[in-house]
Image 1 (tube, helix red, strand yellow):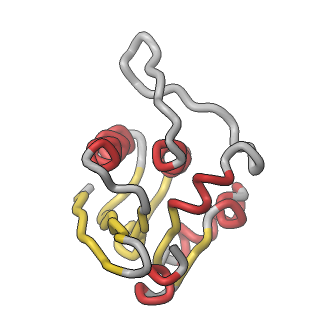
Image 2 (cartoon, rainbow, N blue to C red):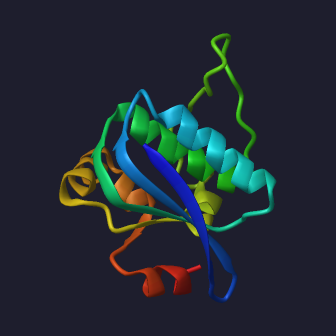
Image 3 (cartoon, rainbow, N blue to C red):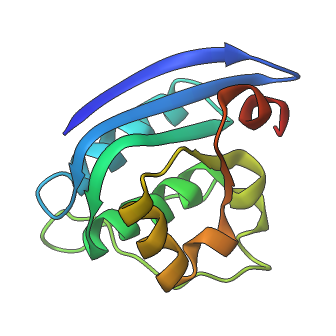
Length: 136
């Protein structure tokens, strides 16, 4: 998995997380770690570019949820293995996450998984960068 960041200036500064490869059990903790570093460095609005993600597993879905919680200002807790612990989505409690994290260009197989598990209704999903940046 390749993980890169860029910046876009809109009404507010937007950090764009560019992912490439498969988002699965072997890569999800790397994504969470890099996003936490970005948030700790001052990023407050995140656009996740999924255009080059060919596959997403349940662990990858958990990483998207965790990223949303980070940008909602919620601290992560780790279990004894050092991996982040997760909790269920709560649309009312996690509303800040929807305001600060959006998705860009998921490939059809990834979009289908997001839709099946209900994350497509949790995140705003965009097909073009300009509209996504304006949405923050």
